[in-house]
Image 1 (cartoon, rainbow, N blue to C red):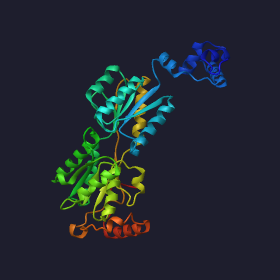
Image 2: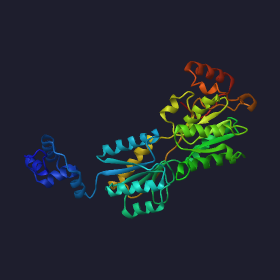
Image 3: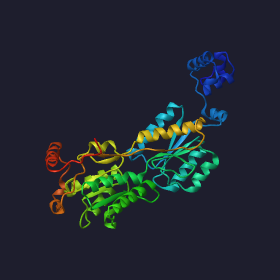
Length: 381
């Protein structure tokens, strides 16, 4: 017998036909339990591994599913992909991952590469894809699902949330705390529907309060710390400066907090900061970050389950599922302090100071809790 056993070897060892072996491995429900166990025992004894290419040809499916995300530099996508892969693996499927780098053209190229490799279904991020790409997927009859946005285009499936409405909740919270000079540190909006919707949400919430978002209080930044710090410095240079800052995600918010520390701007006494995503580091930072909690694992698990249901015929067509995003209030936000009391001029010495020691920070928060009213509503962590 060869060192790599074949399906014929398994059939002989089990005393069945090769067709029965194939059914036992690929469609086990069609084989009697006793016979299936006999085949599986032979497979285990011989160390047989089915050839993926041959299996794909026989089933007209590859057993692979594609997922395209902007990057894995941001933990929110790594966390989502892990949940997606975990659910697909439980169903016996392999996930092929590609990255778009927030570029619709690059995304289209990556999707074409996944299609060339025969993926059975696709998970996409957001709804900024080019129309011709989605038309091609529909023409092929390939199931796909959008994540992170809701609603999706007509005829498409999605598992996501309303980005505009979510960020509006954050702005309303800041307005309730008395803030009126509110700035926005956004991600790059070109080719990114989520970033664009969050900017639109800030504008709409302010407009409903009779306020505007002037150009001096809006900055776009790549989702990395150094550009976020530089954008924060520009926003803080506005006159008068903002008393609150809404950030397009937690990475931008952490960059903002770092720049505030370097400039000697006290958070939240001089500047309240709100993030978006609720990454683990948002809870661990000092001060702990007030942010919008996105149910990332749930979202990507449901996306996987939708694709599996489509592939198995349990769902006849695309389904759109809306998830809820919660505001989590922590230590980086507080009621507005009058401008005269929070004005401070950055000095060269400020830049040398790092984060406060935890003991000093705790004493500062205790004093602040005695001086300032605590917001009464919304989830705390």
